[in-house]
Length: 222
Image 1 (cartoon, rainbow, N blue to C red):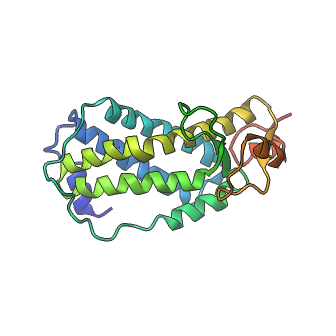
Image 2: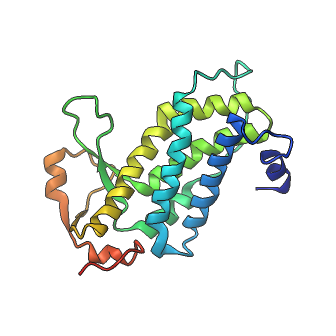
């Protein structure tokens, strides 16, 4: 982030109690923190740190979700120009989190008899950051209502459910290790496959929790 953007985002003239300022600060903090984790300097603490960051982001999402509908000042969204490519971040997390990147998720818990689908934590983080960056670009350009509208809309349509699923996966990883429970690996499962619950069970291979204790930065299972 440039010095000019940093000054705009944290301008002294802005009221720190203002809803838009607080949401923007939370989103900016998440993007900065997760981007730092993706560099891989401290892989041993990556999962617990991501658990914390995604949890904090969803607080901002909850505030956006509980807020009344936000209407942008302009009828049509201004052109933001080219946006940053998230593929580098996606690939970094895919390498760092292998072989715990893939997990199963039910897309909509209110749709009956929906089979689990395969998802990736690395895809989730890249997709969430893409949505958040889009709104942040509006915010930095001074289009506060446009930014809030986008963050609220995309929270309901994409990044809210994506971050929630990612959080459940991260929490499950930490819980498996802390509770000394074996963790099954989706061995050979890919996100391009459309598998039902029985297929997911058949694909699940054996990975003991102690193999993940070190990479997760947690205690060794005895």
